[in-house]
Image (cartoon, rainbow, N blue to C red):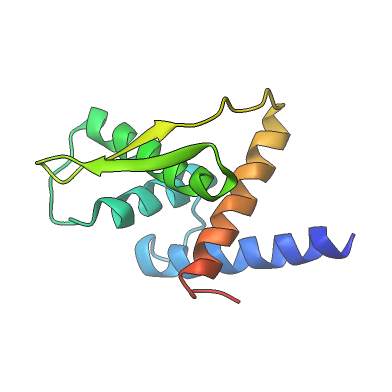
Length: 118
């Protein structure tokens, strides 16, 4: 129970931080948070992204978030600045709620590692 409360508190802190900075205070959903992490990992926020590239940014974020859990490993950055990851192990079959929980925990770990939350 304590872990769930701590997880919710940290998640709410991340959403508030990002929503205030990037979404005029309106709460971002998990996809919005993942997109912003993808932008951070790409590094060039002045780049004009096409729709398919925005999906690629989310993929980069997911790979980066799941890297510490052993699912992906950073491979290289291409000549256009796009990071590439290789799959190390197959992701488990999870129900929707379990997927969301896994991603929220990975996002919290990411923000903790970056020292943006405690």
